[in-house]
Amino acid sequence: MIELKDVIYRCQTKDILHNISCHFVQGQSTALVGYNGAGKTSLVDVAIKRVPIHCGYILWQKGLTKKDIGLVPQRSVFLNRSVQKNIDYVKQAYGLDNPLSNSSEKNLLEQLHLEPFLHQQAVTLSEGEKKRLALFLALVHTPKILFLDEPYAYLDPENNDLIEAVIMQQKEKGLTLVMVSHQMSHIKKTCDKICFLHKGRIVENGDIQILLQQSKNPLTHRYYHGT
Amino acid sequence: MGIVPLIGCFSMDITHIIILTLYISTATLILSVVIGFCLAGVLVQIDFKLKSAIVALMHILMGIPSVVVGLLFFLLFARSGFLGFLDVLYKPTGIIIAQTSLVLPMVVSFGYDILEKKKNELQLFVYILPLTKTQKCFTYMYEARFLLVTVILATYGRAISEIGAVTIVGGNIEHVSRVLTTAIVLETQKGYINQALILGGVLMLIVCIINIISIFLMRFIHAR
Image (cartoon, rainbow over all chains, first blue to last red; front, side, top):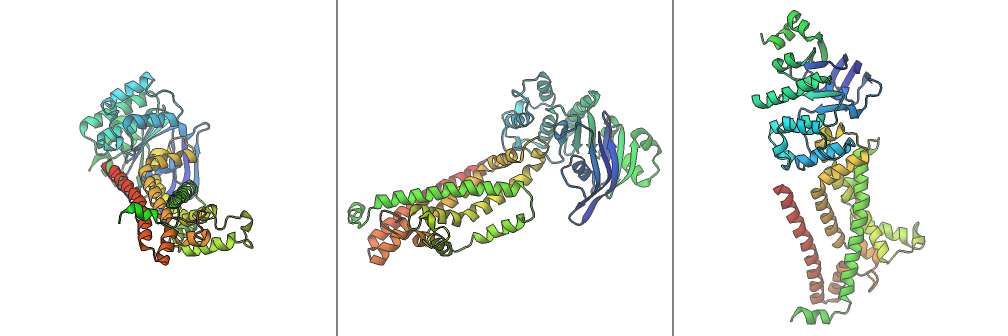
């Protein structure tokens, strides 16, 4: 679906990503993991073409456009308007009709417990509520590939479960997922593949079950198993 | 001595002066805001080689003395000047053009700073949406509307209290190009301090109203 080949991403004079080659396959869910500063968020930015690359190429599957991509950013950002108006704005941008006309949208809104906040200013929501709204907005146009950058960060167990349930549901529907996370418990449940980054390089990339059982690299082993 | 008899003894038509002042400053404001915010939007949305140089130039031009701008436009609008064919010297149109050029760098600089900040703030929200650059720019403008209104008010304050360029390009001709600031200078030079004070009071009143609106707007922004 999206392929990166020999990508070098440089920010000012510092190389953030070195010769990155990987691909996100349709229907599969990939976890981007690694220690802080490994380049996970940069890899997402590069894959969605938000930042220009210095070398290599990014190949999007034929027909795939920005409209087919959903993004839950690490830091949730919204317009300084009500939740309802934020939803309307995003829907209008995607050329979708009347606000919340679709039953699946209503279900998603209900599932994410966002209905009570529709008239509240989006910027005044709590972190958990913001994450839920960001997930809703990323899914409102039924994307083909969803990028989740630390969707579980700063969340309490209840919000964690809520978001995980929605992600699992989307995965079952066949949505391609690319998730940046540090929480191995969620990754093990949600992802088929794992891509371990360290200092801007891919250290391991492959099937999650195989890597979790067979990885001998002390760096990744410690990350996966905590020992 | 009350104000009414003082106004009565004016050697000039004060109503005309106030109306002309408001007309010139409002026209200047509309022109500078429309052109300035459009330019700021272009600078924010389009990356090109000389962008940072233009932004720096706008910041520098903010501090240009108004008499220098006035002199420049006087030379341009003079009969033998490059724009002499326009025949706008000593006319309100000439003053409006000179004043617009004077305040434009301020509108562009502040507008650019505000929109750039808003763009960085909203980039993650807006980037993934299938919007054109113009649509994105309008979103930034709408989201920063209160701050942009403050820029508008500051511009109006600058335009209405301007004297250097107005004197040189306008010529302070009665019933043609005499505005509050030039009238104050004239009355003072003639020794009519009372009249100058009244005109100064009127100017202060207009500026105060603008500032009060500005303060309320800022409070409104902070309250949000």
